[in-house]
Image (cartoon, rainbow, N blue to C red; front, side, top):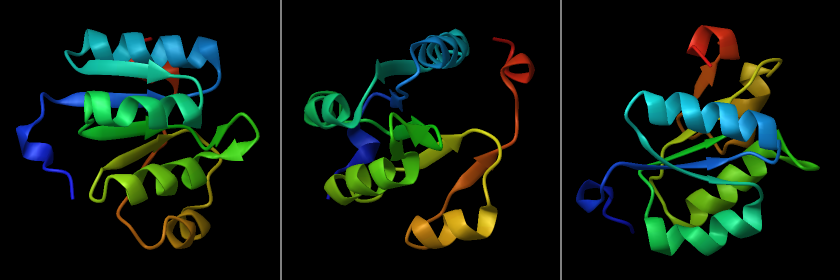
Length: 116
């Protein structure tokens, strides 16, 4: 199991939409977070051991894959990795079951609310 307390506060941002990825990256980095942005699950897997993230931020869908599947895959590699799925139009109950009853936070904010 990964020891997250020994890392540097790095956030892994996984989003296939380059415009949203850039906006989220800039928003979180502007708030003082160290953010590594990647565009697909393969790139996220390649960077995991290198960056040892403290948080994964993803969206409900990346490419043609549900973000929850990518999140579960990454959490299986790094148990205990907190996940934030940022997006709207998400069914809370179905997401909870599909995230294997793990803790999650749903974000109902829009980019304008995040000062992007």
